[in-house]
Length: 186
Image (cartoon, rainbow, N blue to C red; front, side, top):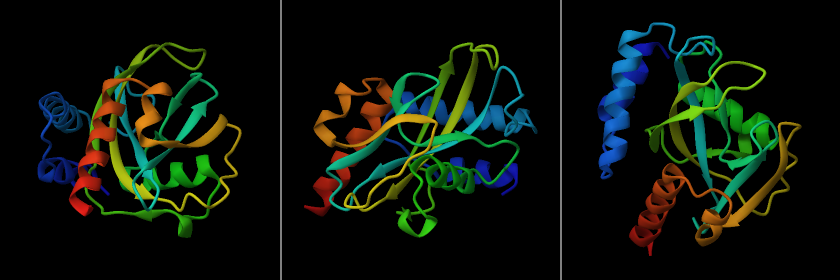
């Protein structure tokens, strides 16, 4: 996927959340202005890819306790120069959960959520922004999740309990989208 592919995905994406609509506009502008936007060395920020993992009933979410940041997040990570951000998100899901690709079902190829967040300075680099493009995937919650060394723990969390693990606004927004999906299928 070339940068134009991501711009096309962002152009097609619609959100009912005003704050997220602002993120979409800012992300589009950033991608247009930065040909190297998928490179983690680009400062003050770069594009990342992640997934919101639900179980088949959409009543549980898979969260990882990230070792480096000591916080609970959805799977995802750096593009490392790969302009196919969907491929990046699925690769990160495979790597971080330890599950084979066949166990990870992409619900659709459209954007599920867009967020811009600050990442604090670490030994690996200065403070910067992630322009995070998120996709929706489904994994059977009966499968054992082996994980990898990037996380302390991986848990299936009941949807209503997610704020006990991560209470930032973007996580709330993805929870709300999941609730809305459930009400449409009920």
